Image (tube, rainbow, N blue to C red; front, side):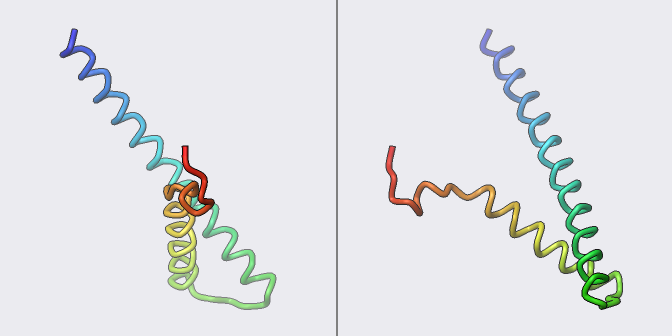
Length: 78
């Protein structure tokens, strides 16, 4: 049974990694749309390079902030 349990854990880890990758790509697309819409509302017309750069920085920051444990900042220990 140990081999089957290990295989199940491996498969679930692969599925979790694929789901996280899909959500990261979707959040990047949404961020590109938000940056482009915000620039057009402000009256700017940036090239696609700068829109993608700004979206990549914002999406990376959001993903890193979501992955960090916030309980260490509050001083609460379990």
